[in-house]
Amino acid sequence: MSQNYKKSGVDIHKGYEVVNRIKKIVSDKLDTKFISSIGSFGCSYDLSELNYKKPILVSGTDGVGTKLLLAIEANNHKSIGIDLVAMCVNDILTLGAKPLYFLDYIAIDKIDVDKIEDIIIGIVQGCLESDCSLLGGETAEMKDMYIKNHYDLAGFITGCVEKEKIIDFNNVKVKDKIIAIQSSGVHSNGYSLVRKIFFKDNNYKFDHKFEELDCDLITELLKPTKIYADIINEIINSGIKVSAMANITGGGIIENIPRVIPKNLCARINKNKIEVPPIFNIMQSISSINDYEMFNVFNMGVGFVVIVKDQDEARLLKLINNYKSYKAFTIGEIINYQEERIVINND
Image 1: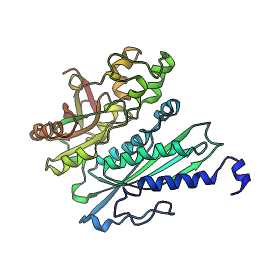
Image 2: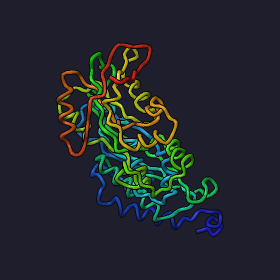
Image 3: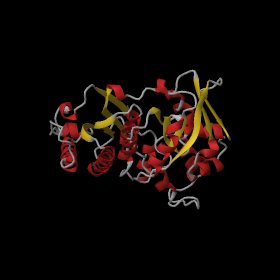
Image 4: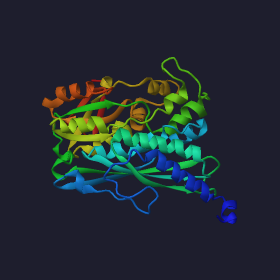
């Protein structure tokens, strides 16, 4: 290897070591439909084995945002890869797609093999939870681009759905019920505000313990984003007619639910029906943030939304609440347009 290149900040041999470790991590977890090898210039996937009649590919890309800064400051990178997969996978689930394969991009100041291995282990875990394969990725060492110990992540997911089974929000009608599936916590959105509230405005330490929480603060804030692939697959295969689905990410329910309903309709939400996790109540109690902004920044306990016909409400709630550790509750219904695309009240 060129010693000049190493002196400039790029260690090719460490890059090779990263690739070899990734191969070991994923070698026994690859889908049989994956027909190229880790380290190839491109990734190949055999769609013919899926037996779709009219397959439609659905793709998405996302990152983890400033939650990364907490992982970096806490030197805890073991679950941030799960967040990356979740942010991508949960988006394409809203169209009814089954995740097939995932690609990652890691840009870092200087290759730290152990750190990258932790990140990849999380990504692989996220792929396992999503029932998809990690096909490949890129690790870029850029000392001049990133400050010491910092890195950024991007993910890319591809899924598939039968053309006739694509979830089309034009099926949403008045009186449809809005069902929330509970989040695992803050997930991966709003962390610029999270960091400001806890660590800039109030000077809390990572190991601070609030009596409302069952763990210290940093553990709570680094809880991985919940991946909803298995329960959404159960719902789709149950025969329940889904009108629309929404992944509650940046913008909270205020911005994300209106994205999946026709413009002539409105979502009426009863906030008293939402089971808000303690972490959000803590943030609001130690800040001056009002309810509207909380619901416009954070998921507030609603990680994913499924909209169904009135007659399917009870069946859907029973299905979700009886599946693994998921919890669901009705938070509202669809009404005619009311000058706003979404109305949040107390009843």
